[in-house]
Length: 263
Length: 276
Image 1 (spheres, one colour):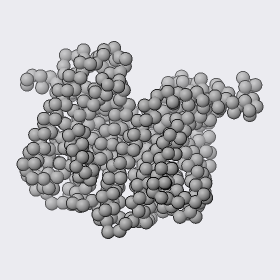
Image 2 (image 1 turned 45 degrees about the vertical axis):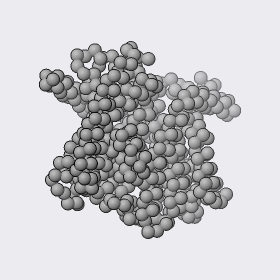
Image 3 (image 1 turned 45 degrees about the horizontal axis):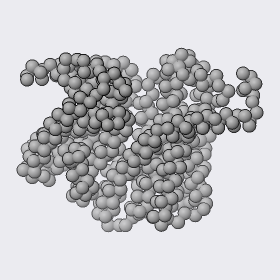
Image 4 (image 1 turned 90 degrees about the horizontal axis):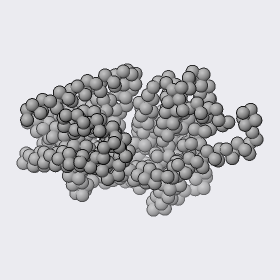
C-alpha cells in the first residue's frame, strides 16, 4: 500500500516537472496565461463589491464573508484545472492518445490527473489566495473553525476533482465528446461563488450531491465563520469522503469502456 | 490570375456568397454545437437571475441605480446569446492555426481579400445563433417584460449591433495578426475575453459601477459590444446619450479598421507561409 502510494507520488512529481518545463518554454505566453487565470478572482471581487456598493447585499452574509466564499470557490476550481481539464481528457481518449496512459505500469487515474491539467491555473490559485487573505484579514477568526474549514476544503476539492474526472470519462463513454465540459464546470463554479441557499432547496441539494461543488466553497466558508454546527460539519465531511470514493471507483470502472486506438 | 483579381463586382458577390454558403452548411452540420452553447449560456444567466433576485428582495428600493429587477433580468437574458455571437474566438482560432501551420498560404492566393474571407467564414455560425437564439429570446423577453421600444430605438439598436459585431471582430483580427510573432496567442485572446466580460457590461451593467469609472469606460470600445446595445434597447441609457456613444463607437471602428489594415500589411510581409 505504502509502496504504491510512493510510486504514484513519484509519477506525479516527474510528470509535474515535465509539465512545468514545457509550460515555461515560452515565458511571455506563460506569464500571460498565469495572469488570465487570476482574472476569475478579480471578476468575483468586482461583482461582490458592486453588489454591496449599490444594495444591502445578500442576507446573512457580509461583504468580506462573501468575498471569502468567492475566493474559496475560485481556489477550488483552479485546483481542479491544475489537475484536470475534462475537455482535454476526452479529446485524448477520442484520438487514441489515452492508450499510452494505460500501457504504463501505474494507476491510470493518477496518471490522468498528472498529465491532463493546466499549469497556468497556478495563476488562478494565487489570485484566489490573495482574495481569501484580503477578506479574512477583515474578519475575526478562531483557530478551530479555521482548521475545520481547511479539512472541509481539502476533502471538498478532492471530491470535485474526482467528479470532474468522472464526468470526463462518462462523457467519453456516452457521447465520445467533451468540448463543452470545461464550460459546464465553469458555470457550476460560478454558482458556487454565492451561498447555496440562494438557489433554493433543490439548488442546494443539486450543488452539494449531484454536482459536488459546494463542499469546498460554501460549507468551508460556513465553517470559517462558524455558521455551521460541528455535527453538521462532520456529516458534510463524511459525505464528501464517501462521494469521493464513489466517484473514484466509478471512474475506474468506466475506464473499462475505453476503446483503444481512438474513434 | 490577373483576370480573376479584376473580376466584376457581380462575380465577386457570387464568390462571397459561395464562401458564406459553404461555411453555413458546415456550421449547421453539428446541431449539438448550436444547442449546447445556448443551453450553457442560459444556465449561466440562471445563476445571475437567482443572485440578483435575492439582492433586490433584500434591498429597500425596487430599483438599484435606476434599474429594476425586471430590466436587469431582461438585460442578462438578451446579453446571453449575444455573448456567443460576439465571440472573437472564431477569428482568432482560424487565423492562429492558419498562420502557425502555414495553411494561410492557400487562402492568400485566392482572388478574394483575406480579411473579407475570414469574416465570411465566421459569419454563418454567428448568423445561426442570431436567428435561432438572439431573435427569439429578445422578442420573448420584450413581450413578457412589457417593454415598449420605440421604432427609433430599434433602429439605433440595430446599428449598435452591427457596430458591436465589427468592433469585436476587428479586435479579434488584430489579435490574430499577433500569431505571426507569437506561437500561442490564446492567452492574449483569453485576456481580451475577460476584459470585455469585466469592463464591457457582461458581468454587471456599467451603470452599476461608480459614476467616474462608468463615465471613463463609456469612452472606450469595451461597453460598445455588450452593454451599449442592450442598455439602449431596454431604456437603461437615455436615447440621446445612446446616440452620442454610438457615434463614438463608429469613430472607434474607423480607428480599428485603419489599424487592422496596417497591421495586416506588415504581418503579411513578415509571414513565411510555411508555418511558425
